[in-house]
Length: 271
Image (tube, rainbow, N blue to C red; front, side):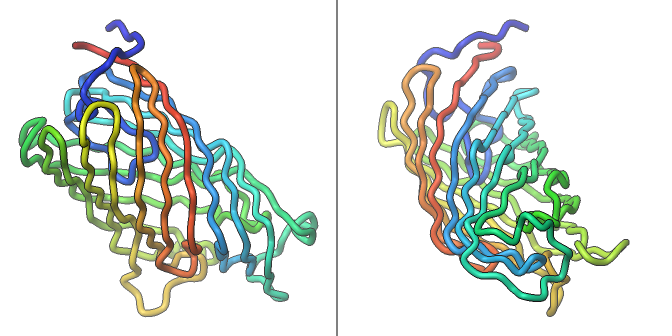
């Protein structure tokens, strides 16, 4: 299979960097994407460490590959995160690294591996399938900005796609490892939804939400609810895509406003 730089192609036939939901079934077999970006979240809260502040993630890496006509594999995460500490709990639940006593703390971010598939339906109209994801524990909880847990998501995926607009999403179960209790987990309702519109040519606008809601009345510390709504604008020219987005957290752990931006190189597989 030969892979080369993609030429100009319809937006509905390409993968997306930092999308809330990947549009499975619209990419050709062998298509790939390599993206890099930056993100900043205001007033993010970390219950394990008791820290609150503005979190900057850079570079944010995103790679996607259509390993089949209706199957997409993804890898994404932040190679580096820096938290500017605004407030701290004097009695954190975990023992923190002495370096966290300063005004900032930094650590590698967690990376997520996922596969999404849509065997039912066609590239346009209704389609259905599934979404499987695992978050790898790359972060160190002693640095204050990561739970150091392995989390798994199993979900059903649905899409409706036309020439200029579409809506796709998944919902299912997230199995979260409890950071402080061995052999303990917290099951959550996990969801993601995104709708998009392509007014013509090189531009695309999208809006959506992603998060999780605990099935317990009281969640284990560090495994609580997350939620975000986001709007994104994307511009494409040939093999290059540039995007920028703004989001709003709807839970304490999700922070307040967040800003994202990045670029991606699109690679074409089989025509």
